Length: 128
Image (cartoon, rainbow, N blue to C red; front, side, top):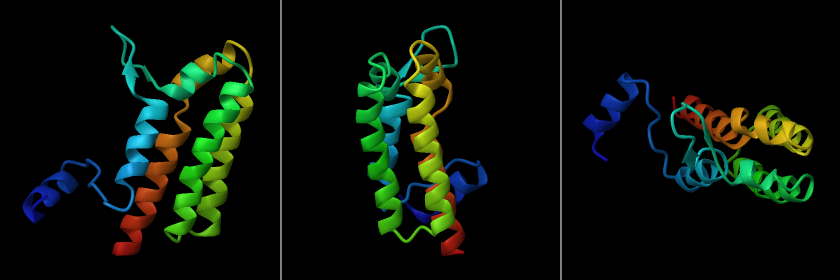
């Protein structure tokens, strides 16, 4: 992407692609917002579908979510940020494991998208 296009994205308030986290962003999208619910502004991903199998499905997606936190640590995220991200994953797992309510919760609470956004903000602030 050219410098002018990056400046346009910054001015428009859209996230600028960061090659260090592009794969994490795609993974978060797959987990949290891959499919839209027709006629609504809501979306869901594999995390929402997996929560139909309480505990087991949420456990599997929590492991994938933990990978995002691990990658954040490898990218040098500070301890406070990692704790915040871990709390998001823990909340998603705990509430997501409750039958029915957990599935609805997963449609609204996008732990992985939140975590990638937090990491992106950290990396941008670090870059200056």
